[in-house]
Length: 429
Ligand SMILES: CC(C)(COP(=O)(O)OP(=O)(O)OC[C@H]1O[C@@H](n2cnc3c(N)ncnc32)[C@H](O)[C@@H]1OP(=O)(O)O)[C@@H](O)C(=O)NCCC(=O)NCCS
Image 1: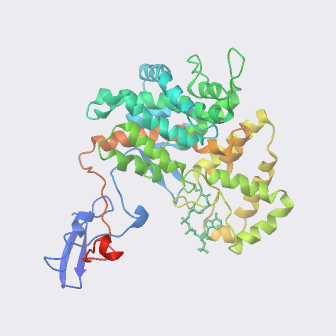
Image 2: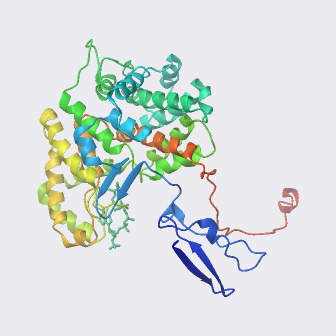
Image 3: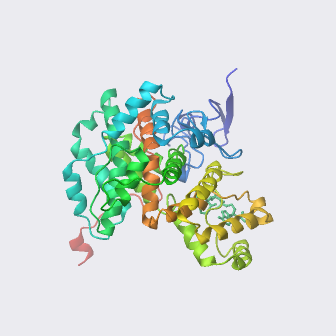
């Protein structure tokens, strides 16, 4: 028996049967409900898409109540522990784990597309000396569409594959150069002998040495952070990629829209706010007074709470562990002590327990990034590099989905109507 919803329109007394599929109803079916033939059908008002499914997707599964995050069905905990970022990227893009031959071919392809056209370097050098690296990343990713005009041929699977490889490969190069730019340091070319993440660290930090090889523990920790950020279903930036991509534009333009969305403080900026908060608290002794301030509604405990996760954020547990490995190499950030104590106190406090507020991915990630000596402006760039395979997997799904249409939401018009226009010469007379 098909499930359905019976809706009675009290304006007309008419009843409608609306089919329920996959726990949802089609907004178009609601649109059939009309007060009379002249008025438009009923619309659904949902600013921020709080309860609107925009697509069918088989990429990422989240159960916020239970604290579950899975990429293509694999739990994030297992991927972070046993896989690596490029294998996870393959999984996200292709929907299944690679065979040995597929994996080797994938790593080879990505590795040999890390270089960018020299003109990209030239125009990146044209940014102001203090340009924000995220603005540089967004602009240079969008600009790649002009270097690969064939990318607009999105209906050709081989062509799509080529652009996906290019983008995953080049993102660390663009991100590292954006970082070096603000420091006035020369841009470092990719070192294709190194792994994806080790090469990124080399492009960030290499100076006069002939080869830069970062401590393996740091490489591993950053690789895990990339995995944790690789996808998060229909978040703001992914929605931006899908929305822009729905016009059938090339993937560079769509991903650069995603980078724009991630640039905003409500999306990618919370870890920076956590660092500011920890610095302000300063010492463990100040924590109780700070917590009181939060409970009185004077401020928020940054890095706590999540729109979706109401039990725990599985990424936070993994990051906390990675913290220890990083600090073993770099020495402990004194703010870690405050963070751990703050977490302990908050998790025992009725205010946070009753509101289901737990540490989220950003509570510890800023501390790790700081240990790498990244300035806060770089945090979202790191997020963007990690999120690129997720954006592309979602884009790929979108362009192959027969049910997808150009994104074009409705509105509830609240302005004036049918005003009479008086020419300026008369209005200003
Ligand atoms: C992430 C966040 C925006 C989710 O917000 P949301 O799902 O809309 O949750 P709400 O704002 O409805 O919060 C529910 C209750 O918990 C409280 N709350 C939520 N997050 C809180 C926080 N970090 N510190 C203190 N109180 C918090 C709210 O004040 C509200 O309390 P009330 O019921 O007494 O009014 C929110 O938790 C937040 O701002 N966290 C801090 C910023 C952050 O770490 N963002 C990164 C997310 S990955």
